[in-house]
Image 1: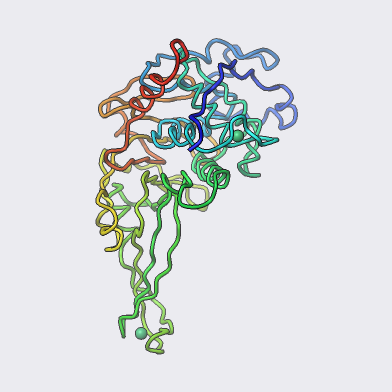
Image 2 (image 1 turned 90 degrees about the vertical axis):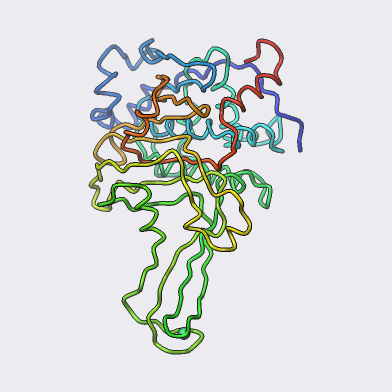
Length: 378
Ligand SMILES: [Zn+2]
Ligand SMILES: [Zn+2]
């Protein structure tokens, strides 16, 4: 292990050259945004610094700072909040072997997340300007354009992929260790019983939710044995036979992220409430090998991303995070407020983050960090 990373006191990022971006991409792109409807008309002059209205907050020490909306950056903010409040990732970013000072010549995704986390737990809890992420959003994918709303799930996957690639490959890759799981697809011959297996690494589970009212049902349906309609040639008995397909979890991830597929191919959104629980039991969906290897298959909900609006790339994203067993917070751009569990469970969730039972809560990770630092640092 490298020396623990020591953050340097820093100034909050200055707002980026907003007027220039708006000229480049055209104001029409923000006209129908939540930001525009709710804040833009109030007092924001695009040539000025951001107004005070953007930095209201009622945050406490047990949770990270809010994130200023730099116009349509809420999809990034919602994901940044969930990732910052993922205790094992917070630790991994700080204690990884990544060089300090950094040797990267351009944008470094590890440093960007690490610096963001530092700002999130600064004593002042001042809302953070996500300027670095905004200016480098194309690094994550060409699909993202500054000041235009992106899909939060897509951003999360791109961010995890980039972090995964930035850390050394192998068993100690923290993204693999924390989020990485594996599924196994068993294709079984209905005549001779021969089964061929396909193993696929995963970072999340993408569940169809149309006409389903609970996440439990969505999981059952996802992992259900499917009898295939057409006949296939079996490589064992050499006959044209019917096959049964079953998907199972072969390696359970430390953090299980569930995407509820609310956005259909035709662009329509499934608006129904899909109820979810504080606990998740993955055991019924695992292979025998997985159960043998993994004693803990129970998970606790610790973050939720919600989308309001009619398509993935319009509307507004925000999140809820759990800082300890009994404490939940709404993280809606710069606004940070303590909320009840009932409020969280009543949401139209888009992404659900579950941590394996026993994973440290954010508040304990944050306290541990604070205790390690000199007085007045956090
Ligand atoms: Zn770096
Ligand atoms: Zn066969």
